[in-house]
Length: 100
Image (cartoon, rainbow, N blue to C red; front, side, top):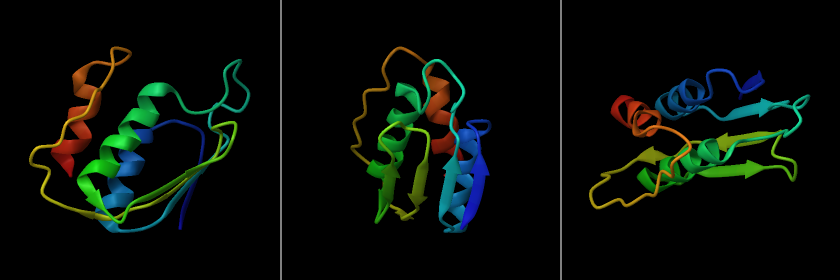
């Protein structure tokens, strides 16, 4: 299991865990911030990755400061619909998809 602390390089960590097939745990995600935990766009990215993989499992604690990710197999993503929201540009979501 890959273990990290903090929210830095969040997308890259998810992509590398998915490609390598290794489980990922991230602790202390913005633990000292006024609004601790995952942001809405990060949770949205996790939902998108769940849609394009088979067997993916995501566990987030109540405060959102701890994430456990078990990657699945990347499957054909044809006809996937996802609302990316407006808090991040579309590139935030496309870059990980291109790598996968």
